[in-house]
Amino acid sequence: MSRVKSTLKKEIFFVLLLGSICALVLVLTRAGVGNRSELQADTVNAVMQILVGKEPEDVETAFTSFNRRFAQKSSGRCKIWQNQDQLQQWVFEATGAGMWGEMTIVGVLDLEQETMLGLRVVRQNETAGLGSRIADPLFSEQFVNLSLLPRIEMTGARSKNNQYDAVSGATVTSRSLEKLLNKALELVRIQALKKS
Image (cartoon, rainbow, N blue to C red):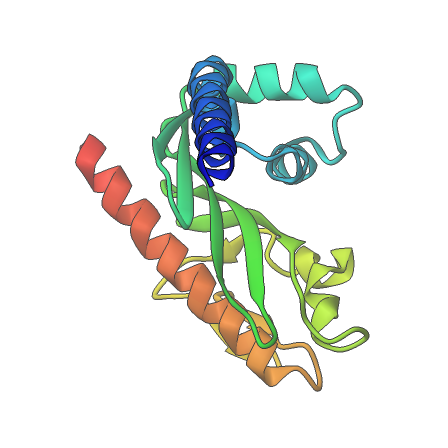
C-alpha cells in the first residue's frame, strides 16, 4: 500500500512540475509576441486588399507595415486600429454570430468622409453555396465607398448609398452581417470620440 502511495505522490509531483514549467514558458513567450497575438494574418491580408488592391507577398513585411501604420485602440470581439498617418481612417475586425456559427469581418472606414472603404468576411461557417457567398469578392465589392449614414442597411434591392444587397436565399446570414457591421461601426465611433 505504501508503494502505491509513493508512486502516486511522484506522479502528482511530476504533473505539478510539468504544469508549472508549461505555464512559465507560456508567460515568457506570450510577452514576446506582444501586439501580434491580437492580429491575425487574414486581417492583415484583408486590410491590404482593401487599401492596396492586392494581398501582400510577404507576411512578415505585411505585419511590420501594418503595426507601423496602425495603432490598436481596443481588443476583444471587436478589435479596432487607427491609422497613424490618416487619423480619420479606422480598421476593425469584428466577430459575432452568423446562422450556423461565428463570422469575422474586417472593414476599413473613413470617418471624415463617413464612408466604408471596404469590407471582407475573413471567417465564416455559413451554408455552402448560400450564406457562404458573403465571403465572395463580388459580395464584398458593394461595400466600397458605402455610406455610413445614418446606418448601414441590408436590402433586397439596393436603392440608397448606405444599403447593400442581401445574399439571395441567405437572409439570416445577411441580417447577421448587418447587425455585426453596425455594432462594429458603433464601437469605432465611440473609440474615435475618445480621441477628440
